[in-house]
Length: 416
Image (cartoon, rainbow, N blue to C red; front, side, top):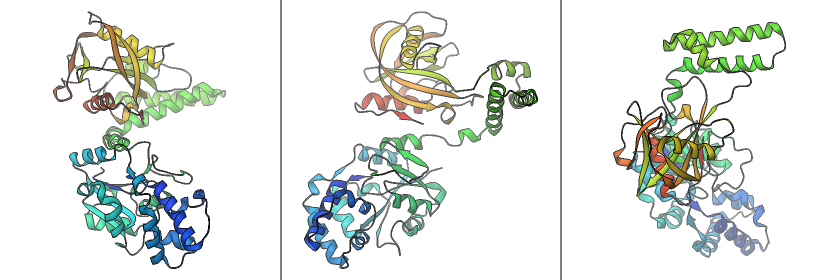
């Protein structure tokens, strides 16, 4: 379980690329009277300034840094926080995570370049260039952070935007997340997580990674069924077909033994398809009125977002409209795709087949609740007053995600 979230600064928390590259180009002109293309300087992003200057043939790095910082001041007005960074840091602190920084800036640069943004108070531990015997991409800064913050490596994640950041984390056996919003080039950066937007960090940390491990026999049986069904679909050899059929039976027997359901019942729902097996698709509508979300009450007295399986010939959009009409009696217009999720990462109980869930923000244009075969009533709820939810369909974290999308006019679709 992640307990400590560590950030790089330039290209991750701060958008400094324009300022760094242009000031470096000015520095080279002043010290060497040479014109350099900005594209030839991108290697300097994410490594200590002294190292960048050395690679550019500037031996007096102390003087070079002085000149560079002077030039950088001319572009300070272009430096800004990336969108939502402050909100994400605040929410991480509210959730109880330890926050830290590992940066290639020295301590003085940290104070002059980063501290003015007023985020210092969020961070428990800050490792700057010079705080460890070697800078990034060495693991030394990360190992120093783990020691100083008393954090176990398996409980930490480092988020940065460069190959050097990735090397620093991976060589210390710490998980790494690539900040794509500030990454200049993804080539050769193979990592644990890819974040399109800072808010994706909150989304990742809300996923219970232990869900898939609670019933490992379900995962194994499901994979066997998947392989068997594919084999039955594509195999031409009668002996192979017989073997794949037996593998399918074994997978059904595993589910039957583990769940207590009869073998005949398991076969009817678990082994009832032909062709290549793909996940089922489920849609859920997020409908708001005065900062409250619409839920429908099921016949078992739990509540869910209006939705259901996508029918043949229906799209995500048309199915969302259809399900809302059937379950809530409302006419809606789908206006935004909130998220596309792999159900097994979010919901319990675990199903013995794959499900992809699409959450769609909708606007009401008419209609009212009417009696139907699936639900008994509908009602709007605030986030702090949710009723008992149909957890197999939607949980509190998923409802919260819908609220986040509703409040954020620039919401970007989140997907597993």
